[in-house]
Image 1 (cartoon, one colour):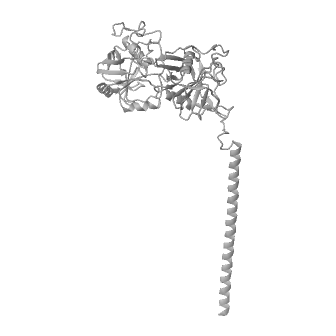
Image 2 (tube, rainbow, N blue to C red):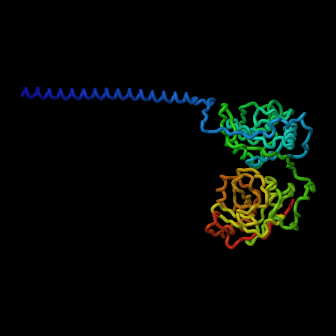
Image 3 (tube, one colour):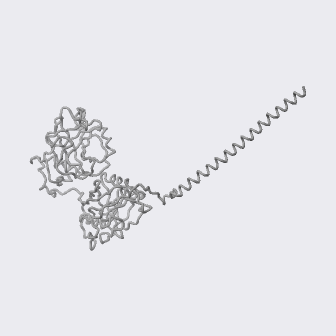
Length: 463
């Protein structure tokens, strides 16, 4: 019995020893695993640090440029020999008692700026003289700064910040806080003659621009176009800051226009059709229409159609070129006896204005007009210019925004809104859109059934 007891004790000791060895072995394995994991983590951290160091770290002062991005080239400046220079500051050009706007016709749209003579009278006058003389015509927006929030142009000799300028300086004028939408002009120093548009608040120039004067504020939807240009910014690989638009933006011209109500009888109407519509029908023209509307008046386009009457107040204040173009064509009976040839409930529109073919392929009146702004939003009751995908391609075709689906066009925002109809007229438009019938083979959807004919469009003047 004692022998059996000793054997059982020996067996229990052997089992305990084996368990202890197994526990010790597992502990050694865990220790080695922890050490291996720590070593691996250290290696990974080291690799990451070396990679960041090789790329310049996360310091914003050492940006990394994508080698696959090609920095855009600018066209040759319009005046490389520097002939656009002046011997001295210009005489007074603007009437101090009249309001003015500067209209920038650029390769991607129109920017309107209301000039402020009270704030910087000498700078505003000098800028207006240069613009009116064609100094800026053909020059490029040569610089964008997505950190400072602005775009820069106004260098016809070099298309760069090193431009020699027009040859004179003036007093910058009163200094004020900088805000988005302002037009700044360099009145003195090495950058005289150059201009900047502020796309955002908190202006922080990253390169020296001296003698800055606030000469005006963008109007209408022009700030949206400025921001579009800034959003296309591409870094300059030769510097640690700044760049330029991904595609060249050219200032075709800058027109200085009076923005005050026009005195009675001061508009030259010699090239305009009779306001009462008594003139002949004309469908083809040699060029754009002259200004025939008085800014101090209100104008209503009255559509007489086979589906009912629609009355639309034209927005002469914000879209003078577009409203004038439509009104003058209407007085030439351009839209008489035409079809509202397209309806599309999916985007809530009715389209017309094509007297030659009653289709989108209509050749138009023989010219196009500039886009007056961008970033438009679309709501029921608006009249809007139709155009192709190309900028400044509108001419005569239009569409009515009828229901909320028209907001689907907001992502484009390039179709110029130039008027608004009343509620009764919107009811007529809704009935026309409700008569839509799909047309097989029509890539644009369909048309009203029965056809809706625009018998005439007359322009009523009031005020």
